[in-house]
Image (cartoon, rainbow, N blue to C red; front, side, top):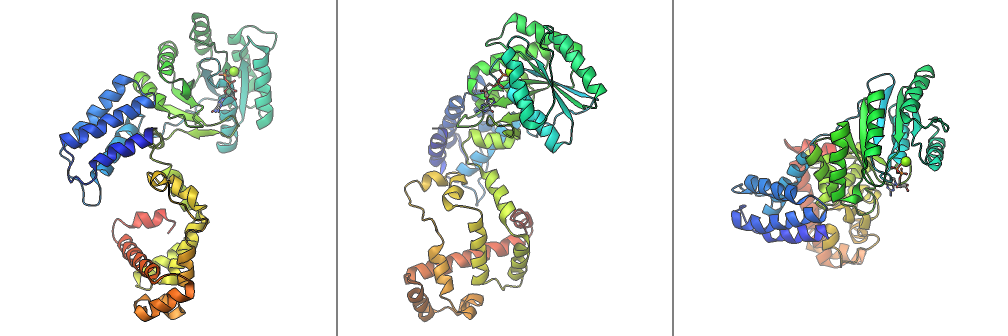
Length: 437
Ligand code: GDP
Ligand code: MG
């Protein structure tokens, strides 16, 4: 799998102080292979690695970064850029805003229409109307009603009318007359690109002049997705791409290829069949996903949610006054524990899940640490410097641990205090803020 390969590739670089032609070549070959595996088009993958190589060679590796880490960063930044860099918003101008869905049958248009309606209703305070313009299959109209019902959004349809242009136009009139400010037009797709479908969507597009024409594509279709995107874009000059079915282990390499070939932003992704399985597309998160770097962002977000801000502020003050002690250490551990199961957390740290594969993670990985701290007297906790060999022996005995374990904890504590002291300095502010301080 992709992340295994990258782990291997980056391993080659470990221990070198500078990125050179030689040590980078092997790694980038793996990166290229990884991209191909993730369904990125061959030429795009090749151009990409060439570009990264040019940027990488000759760069000094900062003392704190391994060359591999630096290269990961370069690859990630470059990938992010390739996928559009920033988040592309959705254009909600116009009254009503008209949004047209396009794409092949089964790509997820109807499902996404519902998700988008739900998103606009609940997150953007809009009053959306869903419009059924898939006139070929009666079941398609029914499907949209089921979707609309489930999210409490009205559906407009004309079951007897076989002209999607008229239906769409009438729906917009209906929206204006009834106070809907967003109209989402769901259309018919075919299993493959065909002329009749293209003509029809083009006619609808011309007639209703949508603010947003969205091309919906199944992320699992890989290379085919690129050709389909190109055809639709040539005819509709669409405004954005929706990548569906990104749940499971779909790598999403199609995102890169499509963005490169049609140069239109990816706006949302679909990550499941339920109505809330919609996410704004973040290029950087997708870059991480493609590189198999673990869901670092989620980890940070979870940390942000869970860290008690007051606690963090209190601790910050103590560090500043050199008063950080084992009681604070203990409460930090408790904060970390609140973030969830250790196994889950480790799984979110890039590389760690593999490194820890064979290590049995105890349900409570902090059990020993807590026991040791609990065996310290209050004065020892607040003044760790007091803990000499004799005291260590007593603590080990009291906590049912070995003296080496106590030593190890003392060392960890020392490192952590130093690190936190450093975070107080310039540049460290953000890190503290990130942790909720
Ligand atoms: P349409 O023909 O383009 O309207 O596609 P549909 O919306 O009917 O979706 C086709 C199938 O894909 C349905 O079974 C959906 O439940 C499923 N589907 C749509 N979006 C997603 C998604 O993001 N993840 C998953 N797992 N399934 C999806
Ligand atoms: Mg449909």
